[in-house]
Length: 123
Image (cartoon, rainbow, N blue to C red):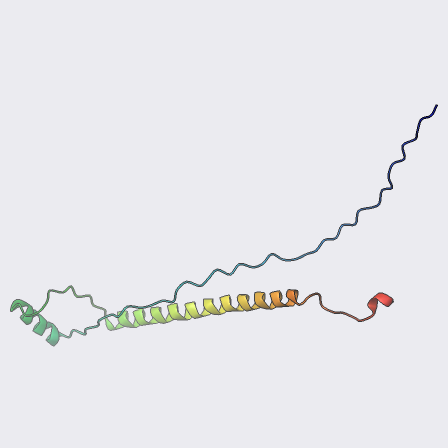
């Protein structure tokens, strides 16, 4: 009976190579710097307030709405602004630290694998 036998091809084991590479870190751009607008300050004492009211009655002063702070209120406002400035500086320092850390890691990985003990394969 002239049949041929099927011989399956040689099966070689598959070698799986896993390369662990962290995903690049996204660094969103920083928001624009804070650009304050000028604030016009006018200190009103009882004398200057009386002068303003007299000028207002005479039609020689603009009609303004006045907001006031006590000395303690002004001190608190000043301290709050200082704390906001400190907070922003600290947050920017943290952002800079992580950006520099990521930059160092990228430079490390782009320079190739680190050379360890020379001739280690020969042992």
